[in-house]
Image 1 (cartoon, one colour):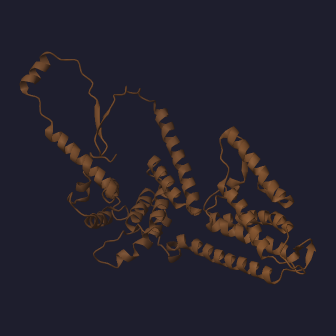
Image 2: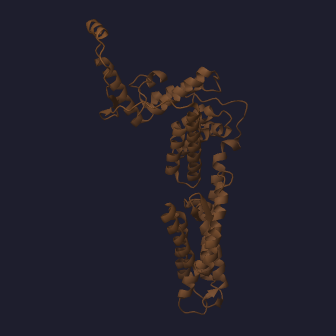
Image 3: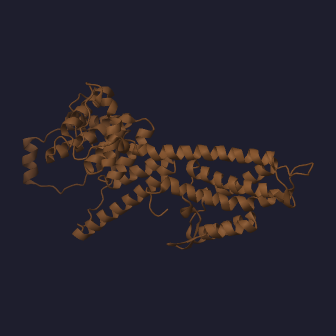
Length: 427
């Protein structure tokens, strides 16, 4: 529930009937005036926190509507409250009555909700509050780590949800505000992205990466005189490469993905044109070469744009509640014998960990198995062994996955290194 005790309209200096355009204009003016780089006083730091809080509520139509409803309700309640007469005050002072517990009344935007009285909790010791704060900070760091992982694997809705949970637990977590700004900027919400980056810079003035992103977003604002911009600290000049830091790796990964897709198409075309001489049954050296490179390129593409979790977090089985056993090498080795055996071993291990520890199987790993089976069918349809009037035999279909799954896992691992190196630790 939004805090109705604060007058957000008065904080921003606008009328309750002000539209969103006027609120944004006023927010920019105040952000320029009270930004820590411009006004480093403690009063300015407190003021910019109130300004950001007011702008977060009033710029969101749903939150503003809920806040207006609560504000109107509080004003109506104060207006209809009647003061006690002097006579009744005298009488009550002569004969004090036992205090009666009145139920608390809350307002959720749709009607009055009566809350039951709860007995007051005993006062906690100082070390208990410190433990609670440390626990909240640890949980916030965990949510931030998961949000970063979801962001870099292109699960943006999940990343935003986890990021907001981290901020709710620790509002001073600067990287969480920066990541939220990245998510908002990606979907085109420029105003809220600027506010998120401002929070990140406010809580950590040495976060030069957030300053660079804020600088990049406000470049267009500087060209318009009517729109003030946020002045950054002169102790660290933002270079062009820092301003484009968030785009460099994405452009590089896009180039890698385009090259991999082109190479995969060439593999299919070359296999169709040059099937090669048969070595064993219908299998030729050209087919083995195409399966190896096709599987590797497909794994790389899935890792970059298939929204897969990191391989190190998927190819593992819980042997105890807090101990995991990596099985990627085991699954690859079993796939060389037969891909069905590898899948069976993983399903048995995943079923055991679900029954024992309630740990789910990996959807990313199942997606890779599914990709291996689909590629097996595709290669079987394309491959035409030389000296054969018909197509490939069923042996080709059954043995194609033996070469595809290990190379798919290898491409997945290389893709993780490309997209997560230097961003997420321990993957």
